[in-house]
Image (cartoon, rainbow, N blue to C red):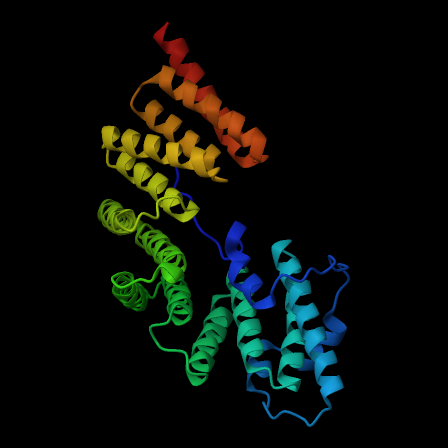
Length: 346
């Protein structure tokens, strides 16, 4: 069965907010040795959060040195995160957190806590992730960030994801409803400067919300309908703003074509999948091979073997260019099925 493309905090552009905080300075890739001996001075994340935030008196020279060390440790932590070396990332981010606390860098503390929360989420340590995300919101609000700001909404949506993944349906639904309501309000009065950021977050919440709806196997048919309706609503609003060139938009559109195929709305599925591919070719979307494969599977579902093979061939070409072995494997499986169908027709 063709699948929807799911999202992850560490996927492709998942580090964009962190890069904005750090600036454009480069840092050499860190050694992969364990940092635990130094990091464990500050214990668990729960203990770290509860430590005193009193800032010791230090000279400007010391402050600058500690600030530079904090930035360096954050960058190293991000590189470890990108490489999925989670233990090393956690250890060095604890060091960064201690450094931020030592110089009274409150924004830095919040930023590092957000990194740690995403780290825990990626490892499916949902209870820890929930605790730290809540701490991030608490501190952001204390620092004067409005409740309807993009940063608060994004963390709230991540909490909603956690509630969905831990079978807290009502909390998850309320969380996604809150985020979408706030974002729809923001999108009704967008400045050009904030348009891309707000639209990207809106699409991200739509993606996570649809994944949440599709997670209920006991009411699969209703879930597919609700998820399709949610994505349709999201895509329509983004179309009105002329923001169809983003990867997030195209991924959601491809997912919608998949949901249409699950409902046997084959013509709609093919139309949306084809249009998505046109957009993805123009913008060089990293998931182009997934989109072609999705179209091939829809054609195969409809018994159009010739069109399915043509789409699968384009999917394979794209997968080889993007070096995506997982998609190549799925394409080979689909081609085997198509060969069987061809044999049956002879």
